[in-house]
Length: 334
Image (cartoon, rainbow, N blue to C red; front, side, top):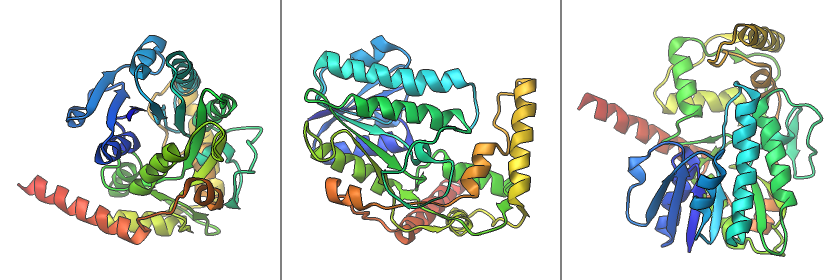
């Protein structure tokens, strides 16, 4: 089998590429940047932007399956940039699949598409909200709707919603936590303890390959979305503290109230917007919401339809993160 991975140079995408190779498949990566570490036997590298329909079509041509993991992520930035990448880019992937007769598409979505409130043991019946506080969840929700609506006899699709992917090699969540902890900018939000799910990288990758194996026109998973996580919800700041400790970063010692976090988010968004500041504010309304609400999920549907069962526990994942941080420390010394 030959599979295309959009966002193949990213944290999740590169994990999917490596897993495909390990199973004896051919992999093709489509990314905006150049990733020399993917230059290995069995991997074809295509460089381009999801906004470029022709480039996407060229990358899709000749493959049997597409993992669409590429997206613009983040909590801040111009709405049109998120729309072009996440919505128009996804439309280009769907059009290319139809044009080239690709029969299976595994789409990486996000639990934030149904956020905006407490999600405690939530399943896939949770509705999309009427209002989003950021462009990322809004555009991912639109893309997910579009993908699921495309399911049919000629193209089987499935959407996965992994929550808070982390682990060795993470270039997003863990580095941001470490950077803010070391600078003293990271603040615990006080108030009621909120439980959250997270997903170790190997489990997120495994879920994608399982979905691909189960996916076919008319299959139980076709046309559906699934929550993915480790199935081990923890109090948010307990999880953050354990990740920081495993990474060799200092603990969080300062805190702010939930009301202050929400106010700071609203004020900073207004100021940054008025001044046209491109860098991300230290707090936004969306971040405040995510940090003060429960987000943990019922995995029954993924277990039933995909055969998903997390193979790496949080404790084992933390040990792997600790070992990775130790190796990086030795490399710096040498």
